[in-house]
Length: 67
Image 1 (cartoon, helix red, strand yellow):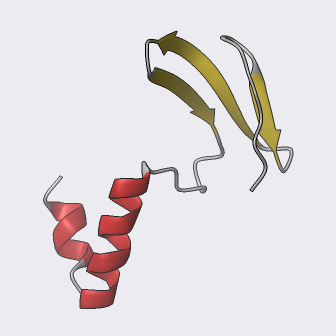
Image 2 (tube, helix red, strand yellow):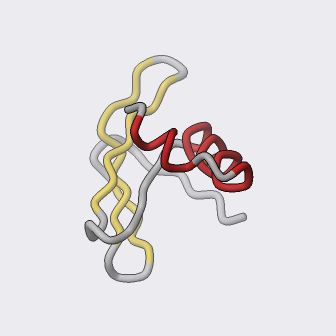
């Protein structure tokens, strides 16, 4: 795992087409902005895990429709 230090308004670029920007730092919370092509799915980890679990159970469409 690559670990980087960034300050507010600083960014990290991944693969020339994804940019992660530190938008705000407030106490122990960091707000990140993600700029990525529309065909690249971007999810919080807990949402990604739920999608993966639903895919394994064959319920992905139900999860997607419930939003």
